[in-house]
Image (cartoon, rainbow, N blue to C red; front, side, top):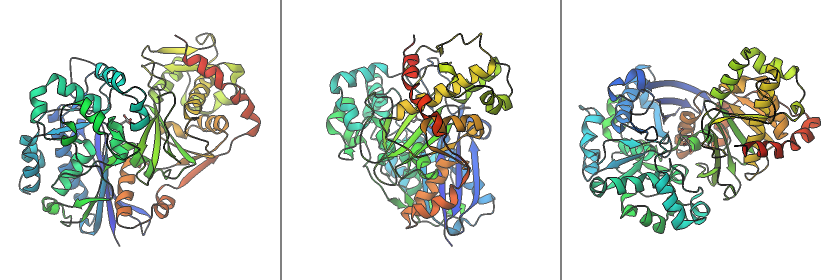
Length: 508
Ligand code: XUL
């Protein structure tokens, strides 16, 4: 009976999940919240305060302290840590950690009587790590665009994006050239933590590496030309690209009851891990995750890119590629619309849809209360094609839910057709939202009850690296809890509104 541990290092917390694939059960879990558990690192929401609102950095030592605390908490749950046969994991994407020449020795010589953060502090070439929320690299993005044009997206899967690691490294090399020169290794959050577990440099996988504007997805190797332009000598500072097992667990971790030498799978990004954890690693199934932001992701049957440059292509840890589109105005925007309409959640989730017809008479509204990512629009503000403020609450609610579903569909057209959409996240409980998605996509909408899809994906990837097929685990760990079938009579209504939502997106 082998257990597998998955660790998810996300923006505001670190979570661990131990699974038993033979029994199809989650055996134990624990989490560390940066705000309440590690306040001394001053990253309550995972980010250090900064005078420039575009700059979002975190303290990488906090992630090390979180790893120690998480493993201690897991052990304290009483789970037999000795039964863990492999470890996998993932990190928030795009964030980077800068190490000096002392890193390799500090890793191999880890001493179990001292905390990780204390032992690796001296190996940081840069005290802070830019994370995915940073958008301070517009100048560097324009420079990359000017140099490589369409090739950047055609080969790396995305045009130059502010939060992506390449533009971040370019800005660092330009603004802090001395520190950059002392940087010998640049890791992603995922490969940094994996390196710590194995006590030596771990590879970056194609799932997370694709979020850097540096990995050539046609060759699955660093693009030498792009790396050389991004920053001087960058290729030599990047770890290798790899998959499968990264190495054996360092003896440091025996203090948590873990077996030294057990295989540690190459870590990936949180979105690729979620693709695995939600059981959508095979083409034909898309996932709509309705959270603070809404995300749409799916496995791609072949490598191709979004002609509009909004969606990204990452490696699929199960092989091949995946797509991801992020819609910044998700649940918070829906909640604001609900509050301003003076409606209860009950009304928002169901009643509003009973009171209005599918298609809402063509009335649509996009609740862009913060700048949107898909499509990229910097000027916030609600866009509507009717007098929104004067309309009845049910009309406003349907207008927003339908416009969001139509925007998801229209920005996913390049990915392919889907007969199944799996929904997760808080808002996926809403019957009105589920039926709208089913009707707009004309696809079967399946609800899945997976609380920590990224950590679960990490655990499943650990088991997979140890020979357990993913398909077997998907059935037991991502079961379908409810199904919503599309109404074919509504297909034409929504086909007819695709152009209208595109017109709305262009409204100033
Ligand atoms: C994806 C992205 C975020 C982070 C943090 O491109 O920026 O989803 O991975 O979750």
